Length: 326
Ligand code: PMP
Image (cartoon, rainbow, N blue to C red; front, side):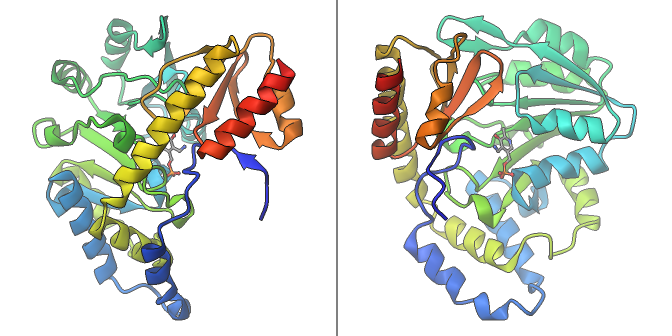
Protein backbone atom coordinates (compact mmCIF):
# COMPACT_ATOMS: atom_id res chain seq x y z
CA UNK A 1 0.00 0.00 0.00
CA UNK A 2 1.71 3.16 -1.12
CA UNK A 3 -0.55 6.08 -0.39
CA UNK A 4 1.93 8.94 -0.40
CA UNK A 5 2.91 10.88 2.68
CA UNK A 6 0.21 10.35 5.31
CA UNK A 7 0.13 13.27 7.71
CA UNK A 8 -3.63 13.51 8.19
CA UNK A 9 -4.46 10.96 10.93
CA UNK A 10 -1.90 11.62 13.67
CA UNK A 11 -0.36 8.21 13.10
CA UNK A 12 3.16 7.34 14.11
CA UNK A 13 5.37 7.40 10.99
CA UNK A 14 7.38 4.52 12.47
CA UNK A 15 6.32 0.88 12.02
CA UNK A 16 5.84 -1.26 15.14
CA UNK A 17 9.24 -2.48 16.41
CA UNK A 18 10.48 -5.85 15.11
CA UNK A 19 10.15 -7.57 18.48
CA UNK A 20 6.40 -6.91 18.41
CA UNK A 21 5.95 -8.00 14.79
CA UNK A 22 7.90 -11.21 15.48
CA UNK A 23 5.74 -12.00 18.49
CA UNK A 24 2.49 -11.35 16.59
CA UNK A 25 3.65 -13.65 13.77
CA UNK A 26 3.95 -16.55 16.20
CA UNK A 27 0.21 -16.43 16.85
CA UNK A 28 -1.20 -15.90 13.37
CA UNK A 29 -1.93 -19.61 12.84
CA UNK A 30 -4.40 -19.44 15.74
CA UNK A 31 -6.65 -17.12 13.74
CA UNK A 32 -9.40 -19.76 13.54
CA UNK A 33 -9.77 -19.81 17.33
CA UNK A 34 -11.35 -17.32 19.71
CA UNK A 35 -8.82 -15.55 21.92
CA UNK A 36 -8.05 -17.12 25.28
CA UNK A 37 -9.78 -15.07 28.03
CA UNK A 38 -6.55 -14.91 30.06
CA UNK A 39 -5.23 -12.42 27.46
CA UNK A 40 -7.76 -9.85 28.65
CA UNK A 41 -6.56 -10.20 32.24
CA UNK A 42 -2.88 -10.05 31.24
CA UNK A 43 -3.47 -6.89 29.21
CA UNK A 44 -5.36 -5.32 32.13
CA UNK A 45 -2.50 -6.11 34.50
CA UNK A 46 0.07 -4.52 32.22
CA UNK A 47 -2.05 -1.43 31.54
CA UNK A 48 -2.48 -1.03 35.31
CA UNK A 49 1.24 -1.41 35.95
CA UNK A 50 2.06 1.14 33.25
CA UNK A 51 -0.17 3.68 35.01
CA UNK A 52 0.51 2.70 38.62
CA UNK A 53 -3.14 1.84 39.23
CA UNK A 54 -4.88 -1.50 39.90
CA UNK A 55 -6.21 -3.86 37.20
CA UNK A 56 -9.70 -3.22 38.65
CA UNK A 57 -9.31 0.37 37.41
CA UNK A 58 -8.73 -0.69 33.79
CA UNK A 59 -11.19 -1.51 31.00
CA UNK A 60 -9.32 -2.61 27.83
CA UNK A 61 -10.99 -1.56 24.59
CA UNK A 62 -10.45 -1.70 20.82
CA UNK A 63 -8.50 1.55 20.53
CA UNK A 64 -9.22 4.85 22.25
CA UNK A 65 -12.42 5.06 20.22
CA UNK A 66 -13.59 1.82 21.82
CA UNK A 67 -13.14 3.47 25.22
CA UNK A 68 -15.13 6.52 24.08
CA UNK A 69 -17.93 4.29 22.78
CA UNK A 70 -18.00 2.39 26.09
CA UNK A 71 -18.77 5.69 27.80
CA UNK A 72 -21.24 7.01 25.22
CA UNK A 73 -23.16 3.73 24.95
CA UNK A 74 -23.14 2.53 28.56
CA UNK A 75 -22.86 5.41 30.96
CA UNK A 76 -25.24 8.04 29.63
CA UNK A 77 -28.73 8.14 28.20
CA UNK A 78 -30.46 9.68 25.21
CA UNK A 79 -31.29 13.30 25.92
CA UNK A 80 -28.44 13.79 28.41
CA UNK A 81 -26.34 16.92 28.09
CA UNK A 82 -22.69 16.60 27.08
CA UNK A 83 -20.16 19.43 27.05
CA UNK A 84 -17.00 19.51 24.93
CA UNK A 85 -14.51 22.09 23.76
CA UNK A 86 -14.67 23.57 20.27
CA UNK A 87 -12.62 22.46 18.47
CA UNK A 88 -11.93 19.02 19.92
CA UNK A 89 -11.63 15.42 18.67
CA UNK A 90 -14.17 15.04 15.87
CA UNK A 91 -15.72 11.76 17.07
CA UNK A 92 -17.21 13.33 20.23
CA UNK A 93 -19.86 15.11 18.24
CA UNK A 94 -20.46 12.06 16.03
CA UNK A 95 -21.15 9.83 19.07
CA UNK A 96 -23.22 12.55 20.73
CA UNK A 97 -25.35 12.84 17.61
CA UNK A 98 -25.78 9.08 17.16
CA UNK A 99 -26.80 8.74 20.81
CA UNK A 100 -29.24 11.64 20.65
CA UNK A 101 -27.46 13.74 23.26
CA UNK A 102 -27.73 17.48 23.82
CA UNK A 103 -24.32 18.78 22.83
CA UNK A 104 -22.85 22.06 24.06
CA UNK A 105 -19.55 23.23 22.64
CA UNK A 106 -17.44 25.83 24.43
CA UNK A 107 -15.03 27.72 22.18
CA UNK A 108 -11.32 27.59 22.91
CA UNK A 109 -9.58 30.95 23.18
CA UNK A 110 -6.57 31.82 21.03
CA UNK A 111 -3.71 32.89 23.24
CA UNK A 112 -0.51 33.87 21.46
CA UNK A 113 1.05 30.58 20.29
CA UNK A 114 -1.42 28.37 22.19
CA UNK A 115 -5.13 27.77 22.57
CA UNK A 116 -6.68 27.62 26.01
CA UNK A 117 -9.95 26.52 27.56
CA UNK A 118 -12.60 28.97 28.55
CA UNK A 119 -12.68 27.27 31.92
CA UNK A 120 -15.27 29.52 33.60
CA UNK A 121 -17.79 28.99 30.81
CA UNK A 122 -17.02 25.27 30.62
CA UNK A 123 -17.52 24.84 34.36
CA UNK A 124 -20.77 26.74 34.20
CA UNK A 125 -22.06 24.51 31.39
CA UNK A 126 -20.89 21.39 33.25
CA UNK A 127 -23.29 22.07 36.12
CA UNK A 128 -26.33 20.53 34.45
CA UNK A 129 -24.45 18.11 32.17
CA UNK A 130 -24.15 14.32 32.46
CA UNK A 131 -20.81 14.12 30.68
CA UNK A 132 -17.99 16.53 29.96
CA UNK A 133 -15.09 15.54 27.72
CA UNK A 134 -11.74 17.25 27.53
CA UNK A 135 -9.05 15.98 25.21
CA UNK A 136 -5.87 16.99 26.96
CA UNK A 137 -3.77 17.85 25.02
CA UNK A 138 -6.46 19.02 22.63
CA UNK A 139 -6.90 17.65 19.13
CA UNK A 140 -6.59 19.51 16.73
CA UNK A 141 -4.76 22.42 18.40
CA UNK A 142 -2.09 20.40 20.26
CA UNK A 143 -2.51 22.70 23.28
CA UNK A 144 -2.72 21.69 26.94
CA UNK A 145 -6.15 22.13 28.55
CA UNK A 146 -6.36 21.35 32.29
CA UNK A 147 -2.80 20.07 32.27
CA UNK A 148 -3.73 17.71 35.13
CA UNK A 149 -4.21 20.69 37.50
CA UNK A 150 -6.06 19.14 40.39
CA UNK A 151 -8.04 22.21 41.46
CA UNK A 152 -9.64 22.36 38.00
CA UNK A 153 -10.31 18.61 37.90
CA UNK A 154 -11.86 18.84 41.37
CA UNK A 155 -14.03 21.83 40.42
CA UNK A 156 -15.43 19.90 37.45
CA UNK A 157 -15.74 16.55 39.23
CA UNK A 158 -17.59 18.16 42.11
CA UNK A 159 -19.97 20.29 40.08
CA UNK A 160 -21.16 17.71 37.56
CA UNK A 161 -23.86 15.16 38.26
CA UNK A 162 -22.26 12.71 35.85
CA UNK A 163 -18.85 11.95 34.41
CA UNK A 164 -15.75 13.95 33.60
CA UNK A 165 -13.80 12.23 30.85
CA UNK A 166 -10.23 13.27 30.14
CA UNK A 167 -9.02 11.94 26.80
CA UNK A 168 -5.27 11.43 27.13
CA UNK A 169 -4.66 9.88 23.69
CA UNK A 170 -1.43 11.90 23.43
CA UNK A 171 -0.26 11.34 27.01
CA UNK A 172 3.13 9.93 26.06
CA UNK A 173 3.91 13.18 24.23
CA UNK A 174 2.51 15.57 26.83
CA UNK A 175 3.92 13.74 29.87
CA UNK A 176 1.08 14.69 32.25
CA UNK A 177 -1.91 12.66 33.40
CA UNK A 178 -4.75 12.66 35.92
CA UNK A 179 -4.43 8.89 36.47
CA UNK A 180 -3.43 9.33 40.09
CA UNK A 181 -6.73 11.09 40.82
CA UNK A 182 -9.14 8.32 39.82
CA UNK A 183 -9.71 6.99 43.33
CA UNK A 184 -10.25 10.49 44.67
CA UNK A 185 -12.93 11.43 42.14
CA UNK A 186 -15.20 8.44 41.43
CA UNK A 187 -16.74 10.13 38.36
CA UNK A 188 -13.37 10.76 36.68
CA UNK A 189 -12.59 8.64 33.59
CA UNK A 190 -9.51 8.62 31.38
CA UNK A 191 -9.13 7.46 27.76
CA UNK A 192 -5.79 6.09 26.58
CA UNK A 193 -4.58 4.41 23.42
CA UNK A 194 -1.61 2.50 22.04
CA UNK A 195 -2.37 3.94 18.60
CA UNK A 196 -0.08 6.96 18.82
CA UNK A 197 3.26 6.86 20.63
CA UNK A 198 3.25 3.04 20.76
CA UNK A 199 2.95 2.92 16.93
CA UNK A 200 0.14 0.34 17.00
CA UNK A 201 -2.82 2.17 15.42
CA UNK A 202 -4.24 -0.69 13.37
CA UNK A 203 -3.91 -3.26 16.15
CA UNK A 204 -6.70 -1.38 17.94
CA UNK A 205 -5.66 -1.37 21.57
CA UNK A 206 -6.84 1.25 24.02
CA UNK A 207 -8.38 1.47 27.47
CA UNK A 208 -10.43 3.37 29.95
CA UNK A 209 -9.06 4.13 33.41
CA UNK A 210 -11.64 4.74 36.10
CA UNK A 211 -12.99 4.10 39.53
CA UNK A 212 -13.45 0.45 40.52
CA UNK A 213 -17.29 0.62 40.58
CA UNK A 214 -17.65 2.11 37.09
CA UNK A 215 -15.08 -0.27 35.61
CA UNK A 216 -16.73 -3.25 37.30
CA UNK A 217 -20.04 -2.36 35.67
CA UNK A 218 -18.47 -2.00 32.24
CA UNK A 219 -16.55 -5.28 32.65
CA UNK A 220 -19.84 -7.12 33.26
CA UNK A 221 -20.74 -6.50 29.64
CA UNK A 222 -17.25 -7.14 28.28
CA UNK A 223 -16.24 -10.10 26.14
CA UNK A 224 -12.57 -11.06 25.66
CA UNK A 225 -13.20 -10.99 21.90
CA UNK A 226 -13.48 -7.26 21.15
CA UNK A 227 -9.72 -6.90 20.77
CA UNK A 228 -8.30 -9.19 18.08
CA UNK A 229 -5.64 -11.81 18.86
CA UNK A 230 -2.92 -9.78 17.06
CA UNK A 231 -4.13 -6.77 19.07
CA UNK A 232 -3.71 -8.63 22.35
CA UNK A 233 -0.28 -9.96 21.44
CA UNK A 234 0.94 -6.59 20.18
CA UNK A 235 -0.50 -4.75 23.20
CA UNK A 236 0.88 -7.21 25.74
CA UNK A 237 4.32 -7.35 24.11
CA UNK A 238 4.46 -3.54 23.89
CA UNK A 239 3.50 -3.02 27.53
CA UNK A 240 5.98 -5.66 28.66
CA UNK A 241 8.70 -3.57 26.99
CA UNK A 242 7.37 0.00 26.89
CA UNK A 243 10.79 1.66 26.82
CA UNK A 244 10.80 1.71 22.98
CA UNK A 245 8.18 4.45 23.18
CA UNK A 246 10.69 6.89 24.64
CA UNK A 247 12.74 6.85 21.42
CA UNK A 248 9.66 7.42 19.30
CA UNK A 249 8.55 10.34 21.49
CA UNK A 250 12.05 11.88 21.34
CA UNK A 251 12.23 11.56 17.56
CA UNK A 252 8.73 12.93 17.02
CA UNK A 253 9.34 15.83 19.41
CA UNK A 254 12.52 16.74 17.56
CA UNK A 255 10.81 16.50 14.16
CA UNK A 256 7.83 18.50 15.47
CA UNK A 257 10.00 21.45 16.45
CA UNK A 258 11.79 21.20 13.09
CA UNK A 259 8.43 21.21 11.26
CA UNK A 260 7.12 24.05 13.39
CA UNK A 261 10.16 26.23 12.76
CA UNK A 262 10.18 25.37 9.05
CA UNK A 263 6.53 26.39 8.68
CA UNK A 264 7.11 29.59 10.64
CA UNK A 265 10.06 30.47 8.40
CA UNK A 266 7.66 30.21 5.46
CA UNK A 267 5.57 32.90 7.16
CA UNK A 268 2.76 30.67 8.44
CA UNK A 269 1.09 31.10 11.83
CA UNK A 270 1.74 27.80 13.65
CA UNK A 271 0.77 27.07 17.24
CA UNK A 272 3.03 25.31 19.74
CA UNK A 273 2.16 21.68 20.38
CA UNK A 274 2.51 19.01 23.05
CA UNK A 275 1.50 16.22 20.65
CA UNK A 276 2.57 14.49 17.43
CA UNK A 277 0.84 17.09 15.24
CA UNK A 278 0.83 20.85 14.68
CA UNK A 279 -2.04 23.25 14.04
CA UNK A 280 -1.63 25.88 11.34
CA UNK A 281 -3.67 28.99 10.62
CA UNK A 282 -4.17 29.26 6.87
CA UNK A 283 -6.95 31.67 6.00
CA UNK A 284 -5.83 31.92 2.37
CA UNK A 285 -5.75 28.12 1.99
CA UNK A 286 -2.14 28.11 0.82
CA UNK A 287 -1.70 24.50 1.95
CA UNK A 288 -4.39 22.86 -0.18
CA UNK A 289 -2.11 22.15 -3.20
CA UNK A 290 -0.10 19.79 -0.96
CA UNK A 291 -2.66 17.12 -1.76
CA UNK A 292 -1.64 17.22 -5.44
CA UNK A 293 1.90 16.45 -4.33
CA UNK A 294 0.70 13.32 -2.55
CA UNK A 295 0.88 14.81 0.94
CA UNK A 296 -2.29 14.20 2.97
CA UNK A 297 -3.01 16.72 5.72
CA UNK A 298 -6.26 17.48 7.55
CA UNK A 299 -8.47 20.55 7.48
CA UNK A 300 -10.51 20.13 10.67
CA UNK A 301 -12.07 23.60 10.37
CA UNK A 302 -12.14 26.24 7.69
CA UNK A 303 -9.02 28.39 7.83
CA UNK A 304 -6.89 25.87 9.73
CA UNK A 305 -4.89 22.75 8.97
CA UNK A 306 -3.61 20.00 11.22
CA UNK A 307 -0.38 18.31 10.14
CA UNK A 308 0.91 15.14 11.79
CA UNK A 309 4.61 14.98 12.49
CA UNK A 310 6.33 12.54 10.14
CA UNK A 311 9.87 11.29 9.74
CA UNK A 312 12.61 13.87 9.10
CA UNK A 313 12.45 12.92 5.39
CA UNK A 314 8.70 13.46 5.27
CA UNK A 315 8.99 16.82 7.02
CA UNK A 316 11.72 17.84 4.56
CA UNK A 317 9.55 16.81 1.60
CA UNK A 318 6.57 18.74 2.96
CA UNK A 319 8.65 21.88 3.57
CA UNK A 320 10.20 21.64 0.11
CA UNK A 321 6.78 21.36 -1.60
CA UNK A 322 5.44 24.21 0.49
CA UNK A 323 8.46 26.35 -0.36
CA UNK A 324 7.55 25.87 -4.04
CA UNK A 325 3.89 26.69 -3.46
CA UNK A 326 4.10 29.70 -1.13
N1 PMP B 1 -8.94 10.56 21.21
C1 PMP B 1 -8.27 11.48 20.52
C2 PMP B 1 -8.10 12.85 21.09
C3 PMP B 1 -7.72 11.15 19.26
O1 PMP B 1 -7.07 12.09 18.57
C4 PMP B 1 -7.91 9.85 18.75
C5 PMP B 1 -7.38 9.42 17.40
N2 PMP B 1 -7.09 10.34 16.49
C6 PMP B 1 -8.63 8.94 19.53
C7 PMP B 1 -9.12 9.32 20.76
C8 PMP B 1 -8.89 7.54 19.04
O2 PMP B 1 -7.79 6.74 19.15
P1 PMP B 1 -7.74 5.30 18.49
O3 PMP B 1 -7.15 5.45 17.13
O4 PMP B 1 -6.91 4.50 19.40
O5 PMP B 1 -9.14 4.78 18.43
